[in-house]
Structures are given as structure tokens and as C-alpha cells.
Length: 147
Ligand SMILES: [Zn+2]
Image 1 (cartoon, rainbow, N blue to C red):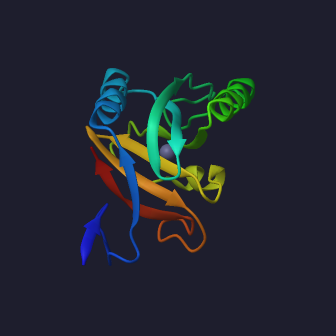
Image 2 (cartoon, protein in one colour):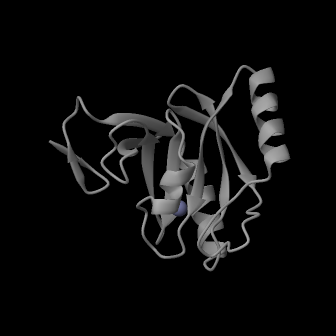
């Protein structure tokens, strides 16, 4: 048994997600520089591996508890990634509450097949959205491979 995000998982069950340590540091720094608001951004890459991160502005009316990205920015980011043979494979955001677990509100925004990174308390955890997730019925904990 391996433990990921505090949830016991077998090797077979665990979803791996690869990210460079420099990206993790950038996200954690952005989150700690902005402790009262959720920060957010896109994860761009191929399959289950991040090759770029793209910080986005949090447009939510209550950014201390929610995040929301501008639709036009999202569409442009998806198109630019596609033009370079990449994909928006997910996104990251922070939780000023200090807990890396996806919220009920996060579940409402989740689409199957997307990776989520949540930063809180100088930690980062990875989640994969899909059927029968153990958190909120949609999030599966990822085994984050930081390279
Ligand atoms: Zn959240």
C-alpha cells in the first residue's frame, strides 16, 4: 500500500502525475504571497505530465473562497496550447483555508479527465477528476511525481 494525500491506495489504483519541482515552487510561492485569496492557473502539457504552467487572474467575486478564470483567457490558452501540440491538462489553485482537499465547490467545477493541483499551507496535492472519486465523488488522489 502506498499513501497519497493521506488516502491509502494500491499501486494499481494510483494515478501518477509528473511535474517539475520548479513549477511546484512557483505555485507554492504564489500561494504564500497571496494568503487571503485563492490563486489559480493552468497546467499545460501532454498526457499526465506538465510542461508549462500559466498563472491566471482569479475573477471570482469572493476570491477568498473561490476561483474563476476569464472565459476568453481560457479559450485562448486552450487554442495556444493546441497550436503547439500541447493540451490544457488541468489547473492549479490555492486554498487559504490551509487544506489541500478539493471543496464541494471544486467538485461542481470538475470535468472528467482533468488534473487538479491544490496548494495550501506550503504543501501541494494532486487530484484527478473521474468517475467514482473518493473525494466528493469525483476526485481521485494522484501520486505526484516531482522531478
Ligand atoms: Zn478549491
